[in-house]
Length: 486
Image: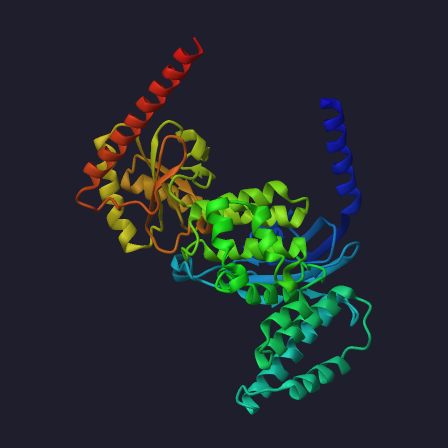
């Protein structure tokens, strides 16, 4: 049986490799010489969790080459400090691209957690007017011009004849196209326009555009409209007579099958996979609205991930679970692997069996400078099982090293390695930010009390005392079970 399972895994892996097709991205960008570039996509377009597609180092001449495997057409992007380049990738195609000259963030931008990159379409030298990127860029421009002009002219009161005329004008610019991805992109943008302008019967709109239609997980036009019309949809439905049982399905029964049976009574929601997507979107939206208990939401997410055979549904459920439980007290803290002052790689695992008082600081921040002095005093106290770890958000490793040396700081400093994803994982929106992680790597305070708090010592000792009690309880329970077996 074990051999059969292994064989099946190998077969499925082989099928995935065969289905994935190679895409080549090349170019020359001298200002990025020596830099490592990362090409990404979204693993789902509800949470917009980023997924790496390829990575390459720009050589001394500025040349770079990505070799990427993709199964289907998808939107992709590259982060370039202050820019975000967007490129639609199609299987078995090559793209010779031009990147903007390198621009580094200003110090104030580095400190600003709300900084937004400037988005642009990556220019392809080897493309023509039939290329998907050319078509989408042209469509977006026309769509925006006509929509803004029309809504300003009619002061938002736009009817069906006007929208139909806009669609007709835009369509004249695009002779019949065989690219189904682009045709779907247009279709769902037109649908969004109609929804804004005159669609009043939302159920009819949902039936026309989503019931018994293919779910286009990788098409932004489809997913933008999906996210809009199905926002927190379960909470909308349970206020209707047919949906009153939804809270019972979720909270009391905790039954995915019962919930989906209830959704079957809505004509536009009879598609099993669409039901999963609507449930996932609703659970994600509702987590902080408190219509449903968090425990029920997390249980239902686990159920969908376990039951579904659809790869995209499974991935979305997993991403939502990660997004919701990340930074939630009682759940594992996001891991990291960063270089300390000596250049050694340090991860959260290195502090196992101890409390970690984790903080994110930028040396340019006056608040951080003040806290450094207090953290230095705290570290000298040598509290039991207490470790201070500072993740330094600064320009380079050398700057962090100099900071520690000049001030004779003697606790753990780690350089953030320009890892913006880590800052997102810990939702760092202000410097300093603090978290307290227990000896099992789970968050117990998120965010944690700052070191400037007068009751800091008392609060930490209460936490330590609670932890010791928990260990004693576990030990007693283990002993009890052992006696039971005897």
